Amino acid sequence: MFSTTKAFLFDLNGTMVNDMPYHIAAWHAIVNQLGAPLSIEDVKHQCYGKNDELLERVFPGRFTMEEKLKLGADKEAVYRVEFKPHLKLIPGLDIFLAKAHQQKIKMAIGSAAITSNIDFVLDNTNTRKYFEAIVSADHVKQSKPHPETFIKCANDLKVAPSECIVFEDTPKGVECAQNANMKAIVILTGHKKDEFKSFQNILHFMDDYSSLKF
Image 1 (tube, rainbow, N blue to C red):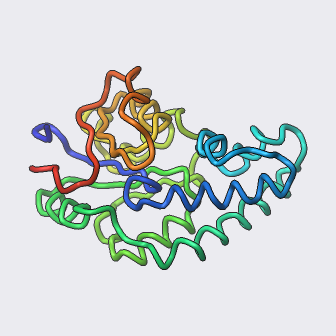
Image 2: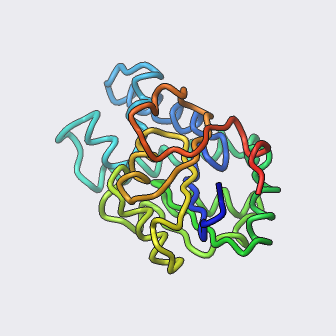
Image 3: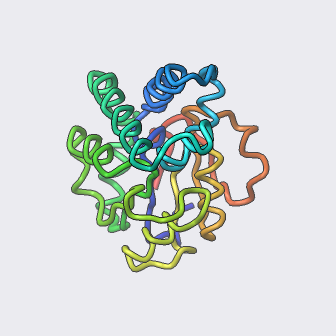
């Protein structure tokens, strides 16, 4: 599966750490306080792209960009407080990262998370040393499923898109990989296998990283 691979590109939320329930809960509380009576499941389906984009989808035209950035920052603060006591890598990822590093496979993070949230995870899991490039919401103009995030990762690593494998947990993320001409491995932390049936670029489904072998 990895014979011609030169780079691994990792999403963050739900892919490296199982934190999506905390993001969803934080957004659920905020949008309901703002008057949108969405269920947890409704909010889950809105949790992709940048924070200001989510707010625009739920509250079209209601907030200025400054207000959306402030609301997004408030949500991230709630997320970090609630998730930090539970912060840990998905099982098997620490060993997988170490082996990939030993095999001289280049690695990057391509996430719709803001840079401070990526820093929060990397610094608290001691994994920053493995990643040669980090592409966050702050570094792109167009969010997933537009391919800009993963194309920028490949460019930063100086590898061709076809030589990359993307690790993702969401249909939007897999679509982003497909749009970038990249294969994907899907970790089923928050979505079911049948939600990915429309994609042709998936190499493997897994529950965690312990099943992956070089």
